[in-house]
Image 1 (tube, helix red, strand yellow):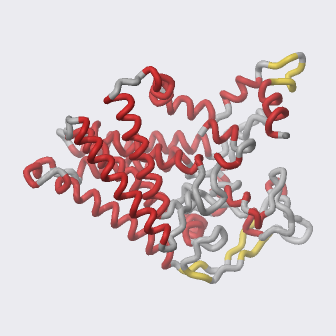
Image 2 (spheres, helix red, strand yellow):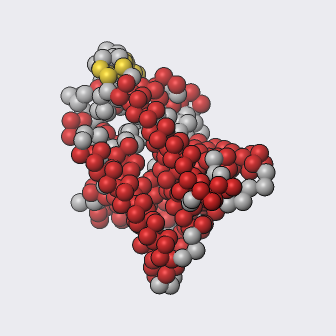
Image 3 (spheres, rainbow, N blue to C red):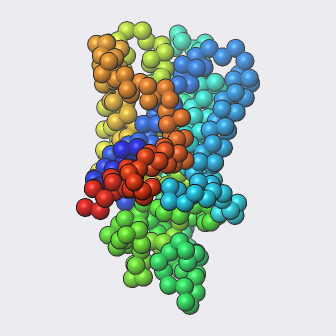
Length: 379
């Protein structure tokens, strides 16, 4: 994600897809959720007290959620401004760590309350069939709300400092919808749910769909001729999409079960590979029949394809590191994995970038970040 954040402007193919489709950056969030789902299978393999385990899991998830609000809620303004602080009326409540915390809690509660360790005689898969039932239920609720809710016309205000739209007449803009089951950026029910329950002022102000050709954005500005919704806030980590994001964690949980219960390398790899291929095939089928692969909405096809991709990647890493012992090749990745949260905090809070900017030649403005922007981005 560090590569994407600071190299996406140079190589757009690795940045987030504006709407439908997947690029390199669109695999990062599902991979985080997948590995967060694996961990409860190891942590809660034996649970002497379910209530105590539940309390600890929820508390751990709550801490992660609050840290996410602090880092991505708007408190840090960016590397170009040394000011800080956020208006509570416009704070962003949802974000990356918040979504991971929700998925982790879902997977942890599944492992604590829905794993029947006394049923081992009935077979390995049957011990965890309630997990799959919950995953199917969450997917069904998501599908019903996404396609079944009616989205009326809606309006929003744009602050002059945050928009290129003219502010001489009025700052209120109308978006024409009056549809049901629309999966476009303007009239989807996922955004409507967030506007209703969270409030439009608490959503992400710079959605990736502004990079769509119809928005015609250049130099970070959306021209007056573009549709008004190009300036509207939209949160890719919204309420509705968190349902299918939680399913990614539940899928990862099943990979964790295989790791925790099967001791043979061959049986583990065979089980993981079969599960990955099956999930990937279902995801491709859903994409073929018309369910778009969309990260912003976290559609079911996207969830299945990226979860399967995470499973395949996990198999490859397991084969290289645990089976063949190529640990030197993955030493840097292992170190980053151990310190992943610390790295995320340093990068998201811009502390790492500010530290790099501290090294300059003759003038503070002539720093390493300025050189990189001059050499690559401006070209």
